[in-house]
Length: 303
Image 1 (spheres, rainbow, N blue to C red):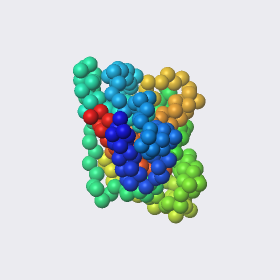
Image 2: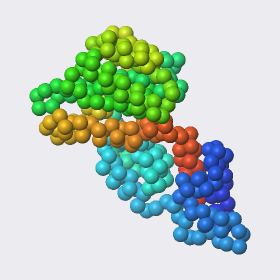
Image 3: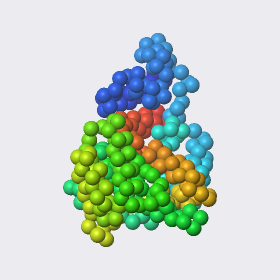
Image 4: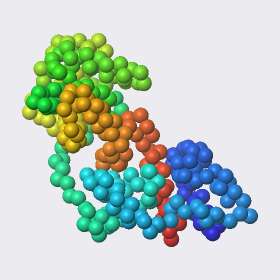
């Protein structure tokens, strides 16, 4: 059994090298009790049999099936990494796919791929913000959902349901978004929008100029240039359609909930199946290194 601890130690050491974090932090992330780990460093102790977090469990299959039933829109990769990050099951995406296929639960989604030039892609948070307005119909009346999203991390930095999409309303919310940014960053993101009346208004120009921000307007009839926020709008709309909304306040509450879920829980394939908050203000490289360490540890122990 000492050989099993040796494999665990190799994985822990690798995680430390890749992440640069302390032993205590890595042990905490991997769910390994510090006192147990230090005891195993003494050759006089044997590996305790209760340490079985990475042993294949008989109910892994039903954990996957149950998770898919509760989250039918999630892909097999999203499920695999979610179960792993939440320490529910340590299964590779291919293993999760096999389980779902066995139960005829593989979902095929037709996703439109948006083309973008590599040179246009931001390389860090708060380099480019995309903004747009989405129509929201509530009991026969249209309202306007304004969103500012960080193009690098897909994080929705600010949103507001408006009764009007005039220049005054949009510029006021732009100022609020900038003030939120200034609380934690000195960055000056380029603001990218279409040519809607609110975005080309004098009020909007004044706010951006006062904050030393550059306004980039996409060419007419080219929504692909604002693909990130267009996709976010679609996700918000799809989620909102599942709620029963009867008034403006109810719509605000639903949208707030959806944005919280989108920022903190929804996993993106373009973000290594991590939620936007990890790429906006988190440590994605550490999360990925720990995830890889978990997979490797599971493989070693199962041999």
